[in-house]
Length: 154
Image 1 (tube, rainbow, N blue to C red):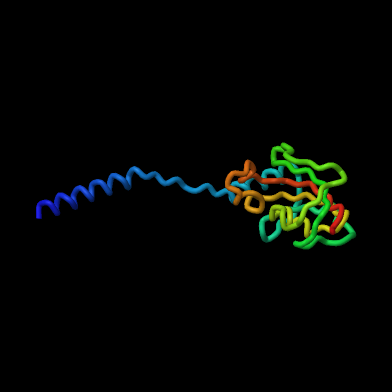
Image 2: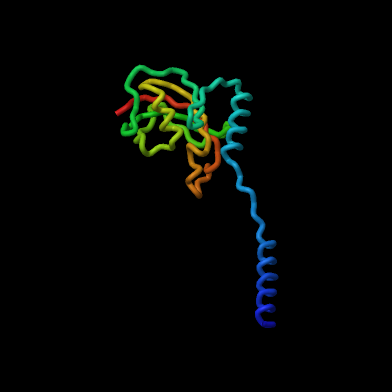
């Protein structure tokens, strides 16, 4: 009986110690942080964007007059992409580059569907519609801004 009592006492003490050694950190709510960052950017730049149900903010400067892209389209688009500190991380030439719609980030894809050929817009994309699921991407939790011109839909 004494050995059972010793066993349970030691088990209880060790399990109690191991529970206090584990420090659980609160997960970071990047959606909330992105929303604060976006609202500050909108306010600082006196913008008046629309917000979609997915969380994409967009400003249509010119809807365009040609075809609308679909999920299966290949598009030619000229763009400049930057963060809320106006640090540019990619910019195309004026003749644009080709992309398959199914190969771009969700926020960009959604935003392009609001345009027709020759349309222009600005998209403010929270990380959940960009690279949040890309574990090692340097822009994983960043808010991205794209100034775009849809040149052609194929």
